[in-house]
Image (cartoon, rainbow, N blue to C red; front, side, top):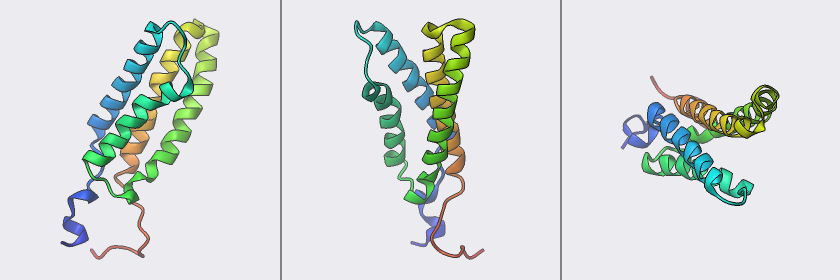
Length: 128
């Protein structure tokens, strides 16, 4: 099978990745609100990361399409920390944390899905 016909070379499904990652982040925030003790960072990262890994596995994305996780994570972290601080000044930390958390994961998913459309290859280029 040639590289051009390989189904693993499809990009991440944009709507599915963004929607499921965002809903996963909402579910994590709802669960953390219901718990008696605030969860640690591992709990806050587990849901959305597990979902992205699931999407990569089920859609069999090639490793060349995963590169978007790095800029997605950087954008998400920046939005979370800066957005949380800005929102906390306006609406208080009670709502700032969950809004910034869900927004950061949604941005991560958007960047990841968009970047998956542009695979990184080690070769000089593909034949047209």
